[in-house]
Structure formats: C-alpha cells, structure tokens
Image (cartoon, rainbow, N blue to C red):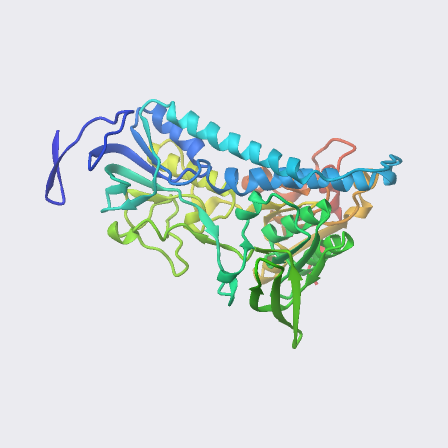
Length: 482
C-alpha cells in the first residue's frame, strides 16, 4: 500500500521483527516511546488485541523504577535495615558481638536485582508477536512520525512514556565538582566517609538514613523550614527526630550559595543559615532537589504537543495531549510521580483506547509511601489540606507508642492521623508514619473509592495482633479540628 506523508510517497507494510537500515518507513498501530512501568501492563494487551507496536527506548528498559528508583533503592534500604537491626540485637536479647558492612556486596546485590529486572523486561517485550524494539531515543518528525536513529516510523496512535530525571539546581560551581544524583550514586564502589545531601525530601531522606546505617557520616541540607514539604509539620518533625536519633545532622533553612572541590578532594558546600555564612565538607555530595520531565529531547514542537511552564506534557482525563492521537503517561505528564500512578495512567489510557473501561485521571486518589524506616504512608488529604478545604473536618490521631503490636516489635516511633468529612462521613485521608505504614495505608484506598461512611470502616474486624487492626479503633477518637 502506498500513502503520502508530507508530500513524500512511502511504502506502508506490516511490522517485521528484523528491522532494515536507513530511512525506512514502517507503520504501526501504536508507537510506544519509553519503557516506564505502564509498559508491562499495556503493551501485552495491545499485542494480544492484534495491534502492531513499536517500542522506542534509548536508555535501560524499565524506566526509573527498575533502574534508578524503587528496585535498587528499596534493595539498599533493606540491606541498611539489616545492619540497623544487627546493631539493635541487644534490645531483643540477641547479643551480636561483632559485625561489619560489606559495601561491595550491598551494591552488587542491588545491581544484580535491577539489571536482571531490566534485561528480563527487554527480553519479554522482544518475544511478543507484533512488537518491535527500537534501541534509541525517539524524536518527532511530525504528529504521526518519529525518528529513532536512522529509522523513521509512523503510528496511528503514539504514547509518550519517557518519565523524569533528576533536576539539576542552579548552584554555582556544581558543574565543577563530582556530585551525585540518585542514578550515579548507585554506581558507588566505596562507602562514602561523609555524605552531604542537598534536599530533605523523599530521595534525600531515604539515602541519608541508609548510608548512615552503613556507617557514613551524613548531613542533610534542606532549604525549607521543615523536611518533607508536602507533609504536615508534626509528621515532618517526627521524621526529623527519627533521623537525628540515628546520628544524621539536619540543617533546615539552609540556603545553598556555592560548592567547590580541589583536585578530587573533599567537596565544600557554602550556605547561609539563619543569617550566618557557614560551610560543610563532605567526601561525597548527593543532590536530591526534585525531578524534571524527560520531554526536552522529544522535539514535541514538530508534533504540536503542548507542555506547561515546567516542561510537563499536558493531558486530559484520559491521558490525551492536545493532539488527540498522542497520549502521555507516567511522570512526564506531571499528574503523578510514582510507579503506581504511572501504571494507573496506563490503565486509564487502555480503558479509553480499547473502550473496555471508564477510568479517569480525576477519579484517582493520591496515595504514596516514603521508605525511611519506619516508613510513611499517605492517602488523600493531610491535615493542612483538610483545613484549607474549609470542610467540616473530624480528625483522630494515635501515636505509635500506644499501639501494642508496635510495642512488641519495639518500633514505637511515629503517628497515625485519619481525617473524615463530618457531613458526608467519608474518609478524606490518612497519614501513617510508623512500622508497616507503607502497607497499612493501602487498606484505606478501596474504602475511600467506595465513598462509604467511616462508620462502616469502624465495624471491620481485623487480625490481631497487628498495627492495622487499630485503624478502625482510632476512629473512636474523631473530634472537630480546633
């Protein structure tokens, strides 16, 4: 079949596994750009439905989660917790006279897990009928065609799933020092003597605690007045206390001015703090000041795809961009910054594309976890947001030290906070900072989606002895916000 593209006649033919060289136009039902976590849930459905799919990936298959995020970092966190519990052995009547950290084995373990996961995904996709892999970064030629290296392909539908990358702050001197981001840190061969972390949010705090437990001296420099700027102040204070009790130095309101390094020696960070000029030296510097979308190399202008002021691709309720046949899922659209939101974006796209469902972005309830130890789990509103909503709010709290299962585990740091709309009786949100918080928070999600009264939740009979069993009982303490 012959068709015309921008005045040029090209041959349209069925996708094949062996790709040709040069400017060969192949047409697909779907071009899938990037291989974040929605890839493994949507592409198999496309293939099963008989669609031809081209996947373009210029980096490692699996996106941030598999290669630089969830998989390696939580593997490191697990090793760090093992070290922490070994030090605490005597608290449980277990005397461990001597142990050491084999940092090489820690890093080899996380590297094996992430590399195997990435290679496994690539091999799995390569074996699917109707799916072609293009190992290169895609750039739009127009709204239906993309270039990957020497190949130009076209698609009836295009899905952008390119994720995000560490944001590089405009710190004078940063380009002249050997600084780390969350990806480069995973390639360390030796344990840092003193790790300085710029940024007191999720990535920075998780790595800070882990490396302190491995034996590094750790300093966190946070520009704001509290850690975890998205969370309530009381939750942030508890998290700060947890980290400080483990020996991490935390400086709030630290305004970074410049950094310097001489001859691969220590890195010096200059900052203002409470009106005074001060410095700290570290053997290593981790910059963890947020993420930026991977939209800059796509040549979106050629396709007419719009972004917002921060570079995130704008989408509607079903993941469509302003160009109806082009979709954006995952971190690149700015609608979520987690693996589970990326996967949900893919589910929303599939529902719309296949006509088999009706999920929408606006229906999603925000939920996430932060993996310091003990972890933070959060769903829906926090107290600050509830107050700003001007609703008639009821709130109940319970310190972890009053929960029997937490005491039995000797994991009593933390706080549970549950928010209810007094008029509708719906649960609006919950925050759990404490043992099991990352798992327990998910029990609220189905209930909140069902929009049922908290009084029904209160009737639930849950397994004893668990931390989760106390969640319904905490509702007995609901009281109006003061």
